[in-house]
Image (cartoon, rainbow, N blue to C red; front, side):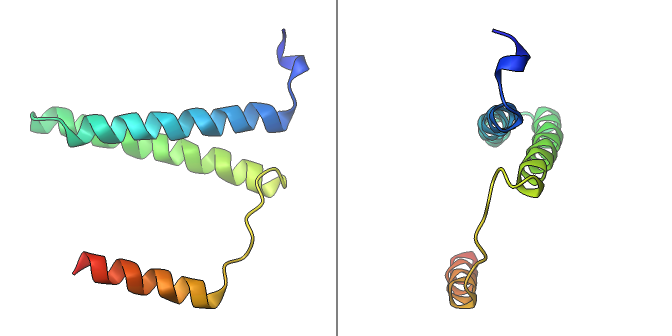
Length: 88
């Protein structure tokens, strides 16, 4: 099987799925580091991986491959209230 057998949507979808998995793992690694320098390195890598994930997501979204419906104002306000209470 060659790259020609896959659509752009399949390739980007696989890339996004891989990035989601990668960020989950680096998040776990960073959270469980005992050594501060290693944690800092893991956090830098995690930030880079999130950036890559955002780039792939935006590429898919711009091409209509990952549609996101607009959020309702009521749901936005509910989410803000919910999460602002949990931070306090």
